[in-house]
Amino acid sequence: MKRFIDLLTDEVSAAFEACGFEARFGRVVLSNRPDLCEFQCSGAMAAAKTYKTAPVKIAQPVADVLAKKTDVFAEVAVVMPGFINLKVSPGFLSDYAGEMTSDARMGYETLADAGNVVVDYGGANVAKPLHVGHLRSAVIGESVKRILSYAGYNAVGDVHLGDWGLPIGQIIAELHFRKPDLVYFDEDYEGEYPEEAPFTISELEEIYPCASGKCKTDEAFKEAARQATMELQSHRRGYMALWHHIMSVSVADLKKNYDNLNVHFEVWGKESDAENYIPAMIERLKADGFAEESDGALVVHVKEETDTKEIPPCMLLKSNGATVYDTTDLATIVERMEKYDPRQIVYVVDKRQELHFEQVFRAARKSGITGEANRLRFIGFGTMNGKDGKPFKTREGGVMRLENLIGEINDAVMKKMTENRTMSEEETAETAKIVGLAALKYGDLSNQASKDYVFDVDRFTSFEGNTGPYILYTIVRIKSILAKYEEMTADRGEQEKNVPASETGSVSGVTGRAESSACAGNKESSEQDGCEPIRGMRKICCTGEPSEKALLRELVKYNDVMEGVRDDLAPHRICSYIYDVSDAFSAFYRDVHILSEEDAAKRESYIAMLRLTKKILEQCIWLLGFDAPEHM
Image 1 (cartoon, rainbow, N blue to C red):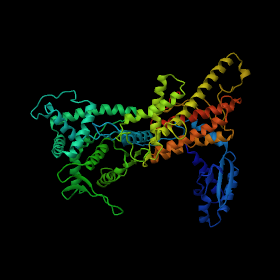
Image 2: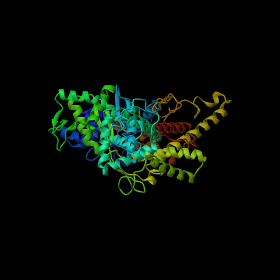
Image 3: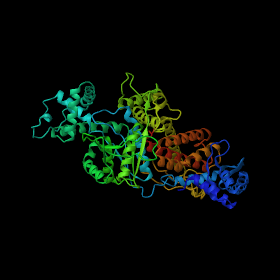
């Protein structure tokens, strides 16, 4: 379905051509002065240079042609020096919105032959609890994956766990210190290792920081950890068994915590998965002349002549033969190309790692690991800060566990809901979890990913303003109106059962089916990506009421907004859009008596608009990674 703005551009372009000018000057954009007009074309200024005349002499004849298109434009005016200001007709808005209601995706089309895409997000390290620093990667990455899936890609989310380096060696060394008699440390042991791990998740989470701290002060322990890491990576049998225990216990806990965030991965990949691809990759890079020695290390030089700053080489092997993050990340691309042949690989990572990924991406492209059809994208996110402007900490100054942050948000929402509770305590608690997750995710996603932001529990959990709870409240209010409408319909249907058809007419307001070509109805449809279909045949006929028209203008932007979100992978634009939709609905709800409207056609139109509004909002919050409750 063509974008609404493109339909307007077609009309204005045709008017330019009718007046003897090139159609390319007819581009229409949203007005940045809604008090003056709804849309605007500034093409006459550019055309003036081509045709060597005053802009107004181009704009005026074009406007005269457009003014005759009363089915499209309600008002057309020329403003000096040559802007063409436009207001669309209510009927044109109605027709487009009607088409949206008849389409399961509200006019947003999937990309043809989009193919596979891998989204690398999460990035947690095993043996460590998720903390606030893991929030942004998980929340942004999940939304980006859903955006790509909705666009038509086969989107694969990969958590890519950190499981294969010094941290694991530190844990093994500390376990050896604490429990030297464990069978895993007996090099002569040839039997089966126990199925149950010799530690719980709580013990494991205490062992790692202890071992990490020792490495900073105890040189002998530091060397033991290095040795354990080397022996693990050489696949020492007992250490591999411990590694499997660490993975099993950690992944079970991580899945539980990610589930609480409504974040789900298709692949639970690990850094160690790349190990099998490294030897062949390095041999190939050597043979093809891409890998070179530099101060004893093996590197791929990636600096380009156009660089204005220093870009270090991508390191494959250190001088002692050890691999580094460059190695495993490059080998992971080899693995993903072999398994998925993706059109895109998207990395959602702390923006401070941008240089590292630039080196890896360049090495992949230069060496032919990826081709022109495979796009590597980096989405770097900023820091979540406290009100003091510094990285978010607990009151005691430590790093807050993610589950505690979620609990704090839920408690704040629960407190606000309890003050005006109309539900049972159990239902209130369950609803608070849904609203709390929306508050947390929307608070993060409403910011552009690359920017730092201040985490403010009071602001994020507010039921007013640009917040998740406000968006959910809008959806719940619409659900309530529609539920009351269904009750009215059912009651009226019972009353009319015994009334002869000749007395009710062919269209009886709430029970009839509209056949107007100007106000197209819709068949029941479905959308598998998260929202319910629009039920029943309903017509939209805009009366021109300002708040009614304003809401329709927001609704018809949907596929335009979604295309921009898809191209730039920008969840914050979804937040901005649904906030505008919610505000427009609030004004409409305030100004228009929806259910008490006596004119049946108007009432039907209002209900159709509400159904479309609800569907758009529900689809958008699904893309953001949260849902709406039934009541609030």
